[in-house]
Every structure is written in structure tokens, then in C-alpha cells.
Image 1 (cartoon, rainbow, N blue to C red):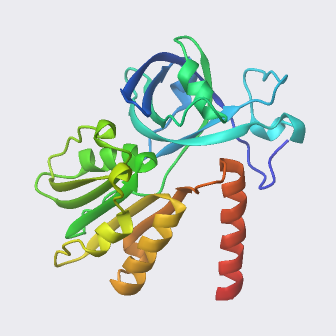
Image 2: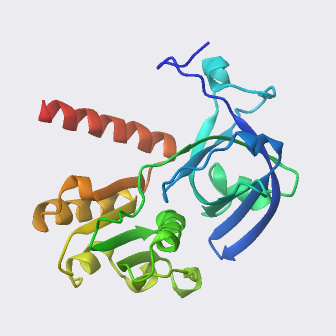
Length: 269
């Protein structure tokens, strides 16, 4: 059986090797195991996987292909950026924002122990810093921080990057390692900082910018308007996406995004 697009979707079954609390609201999961033999890294620094959560009472076979599941067996999914993958050690690192003990992913990530299974599909991705750009703009909240960190590590020596990251407070800041000429501004919700305002007031170097703007849909929408409308940045020099929307769980947000995309296509047509 295949999915609606006729595609097979095999699932990788990894095991938790260890976890680490990076900040009060960021938990690192290191996965390994023979199930990751099929994992193939992309060149994207926003590479991601989808973690699968089976419905209550459903046990999946091994091996598993999503295309073989009936509608009532299909899992809920949460998307996480691949912070790193070590093919030789067969270790996959995911940094997960922890929102507390409510919802789907919060209780899961807080209670993981070594040996627990993690079911994955992917990876996907669509962005890596362009070597043709004169400078780089990286903007995001906690959900985009793993991709921003990976992007900074990928930039070559001396590349110019302006980085704006919104987190709750100073305790949520993380060390960011790079060879680039990176100028990093940490913004804090606790003191009322605002990403769109910070980007609007930012220094704007000469030359071609390559912009990465990901995170909560509200600020992403505002900054998209700034870049494409006010700054005149060509769409092909941007990677802009709402990872989540305030007040909506992942399923509802995917539905809203699909509806918005359909409306945009209808308008453009």
C-alpha cells in the first residue's frame, strides 16, 4: 500500500542513548542504534525529522511503513531539527524545546530514558547558507535555534552574519560556535523584546543578503513583509517559514498553513 501520493514512507526505529538539559527549556536527545543505518544526511542546515507518536493502544510492527497504516493507526507527528548526525558513530542529535508537562511532546521528552524507542521519518530540509551571498541574516526563536546553530557552524571563516534570536531570558541562551564574523543579538521575551522591531532597526550591510527566518508564525509573517516588501529582497534569497503558531497545536497549525497556502495559490492564479 502507498500513501496518497503513491509513496512508501519507511520508518526508522532508533533508541535513546542519553539526554541532556541544555537550558531550562531545551532538552537534547541523542539517538542511536541499527535503525539509523538508513539515515542519510542532507546538505541542509535546517535538516529535520518527524518523530512519530502512536495512538493509544496501537503497537507498531518492526519494520514499519507509514503507507501500510489504516487511518485509525496513523501517528501524530512532531517535527524537530537535526542538530547533528555522526554517521560513523551512528548518533543523531535532536534539540527539543520543552514547554512543560502538558500536550504531546512535553511529557514524552521529559521522561525519556536510555533504551527507549524513537520512531522517525526523514530527513527533510531546504536551507543552507549560500556561498554566493555577501552576508547572512539568521532570525528565529527557540524552535529555530538548532538550525541557526548548525548554520553558524557551517559558515566559512570570516563570512558576515547578523543573528537575532528570541528566547525567554538569559538562562535560555546557548553558546554558538562559528568561524564566521557573526554578530549575535539575544532578545528576551521577559523584557518585552520584539524580533520584527529588532530586524527593522538593524544595520543593513551592503551586498546580497541570504536570509533565514523561522519560528512562530506571527513574527515570521511580519519579517517576511519587511524583507520582501520593504527591503526588496528577492524571494529566492530567503528561507522563511512558520514552525508553529501561538495558540495552535501542530495538527491545527498544519491545517491552517495548508489553507493559507491554498488561498495564496488561488489569489495568484
